Image (tube, rainbow, N blue to C red):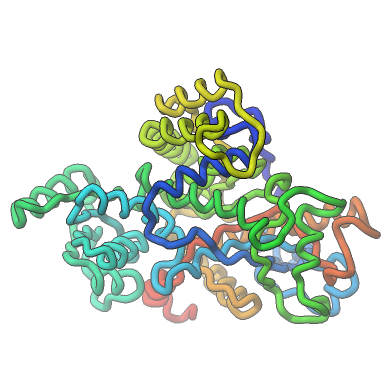
Length: 486
């Protein structure tokens, strides 16, 4: 299944980089980020190289589960030692950021909650389903910051609270269950609850956090992540610019792989950073519910001028919904932060801001135009390095096929990585599929050298990246629905 390749970022109108070079844009964005308060001390995340077999699925694996079967099957050591048997793709382990919450929810709250604290907010109100990772994250983070949380849960209280529902009830100040009819009008539902909180405490300063964290301030944590991904290469000693032949990042991957990996059964390797970030056209795959994570990453990439593309896997709506969401969030983000961002870029480019890492300057007219566009929030979301694609096996949101749980178990046992069938499995399947396609093509183009190298045990590095946002606690709820599948 060949997915269409997006237009390269360079030259896109509407969301210009902060400066004329990537280094200068990185410095300008760093200045902006340093002036803000954050939930997490750093933006780092573990980066790993994942190996999956390149052999195409046999006749038994056709239709619905072809990609799933190939994605889950561990590569046999003997096969990997004889040729281009395995594809390598990069995994950002945001699922390891917090012992309870995972990653993408922490990223959204990273810049959002500190803004509320600075504004004097005492109470936060938000909503979600019974197994909502978002409400659990808000409950935990609010408790850590001394805020009261009021959590509106769609549907009836479960007889046995497990997973994210258990966390929500443990950490949430007030947990209420609302009917589906009431939940359908979220604005009215929020207004009623905010008024109730104010009646109970006249001194309360209440803020509403949108369902799933879909707010301009929630994008800050993802912009911060994109900034870290660019800078991590030099910090970890991994190449920051392209060099030599072979697949993108392959040379650095070979240097970081432990000796004798070709005969090892280990299929995941810690690498520290994405190699050659300024020149490699990475495709970052993100499973998308509200789409906020994918949109935030794409904005950060655009501000830095990187040749990367975010691929959002649509799980909860049609493409029209995600495009509308991207436009709304981008406009809100630029209206709120655009003048400051492009103002810093202009100051550093003209030598007024102490720019770090870049000697080139931006022309006054270009920078002024960028600042004006950013301040007005006029940029088109269609100009973002962002592509929306369906799941490899489309289904209504929340639908789980019997093979999905089996695949998650196989991946856990062969790779030591936990997935959930509703969200992260969709990105894993697509990452495996794209990496396999790229590795086979590379082997056909250069069978004796280049992208495939015996020093890597027949592993072909590809520019495919998956952002693993967590979601493991969701398995607890699924185990109640499908006890026999586990």
